Image (cartoon, helix red, strand yellow):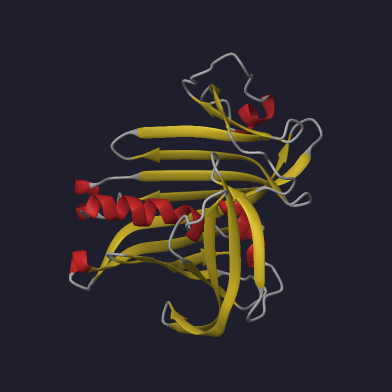
Length: 275
């Protein structure tokens, strides 16, 4: 039961909940669960680290944003013994064109999945590469992405995703990067096209409230945002609403994240920030 809850609640939502960064910073969080599986008590389950910096890509020396998310159960013995997991998610985002260029997904649980998704803007396609691709040789892995990964591993063409790429397609990280610095006001409502590297989603972001919350023993004024996603062509939501509290200051630091699961709540709270 806890295996399914952790997998569906934390790993499925953490990519969306936790990846909001600015020019150069490292943010540390603790992820916890509170619900029927712990008799209503808060139970810490993972550490989360977020890093961001600018990066120069290709012969054209294009300046892009790189955002990296890492999640681990290593420091939490109960979870590590029963359901150990490691997650890494990296995004390359072009702030000038307001679109994602590529993203890396690495997840190690009972099995390991490592995939690179690349947006071919000229063909309007989303291409997926893996260490052992299903269709190796049909498409060549872009040189710029190989440089981005440091040449540590070779990737082969896996498949095309059935996604018609819109001009300003975002991934979870770049979505939150954009939303973080929008001119927020209570009642504001924004819409975006988003991909997870495979599917296409319609996202709605609403500003629900503006109030004080207590983080690290201090009261901080914050905007409360609600994220709702629906896969293209589907009638039902892709997930339950996700809530993000962003500090109302010049840094717009993400303070708190919440996913309300049927069996309880997953909460991710800021523990430290180097900005």
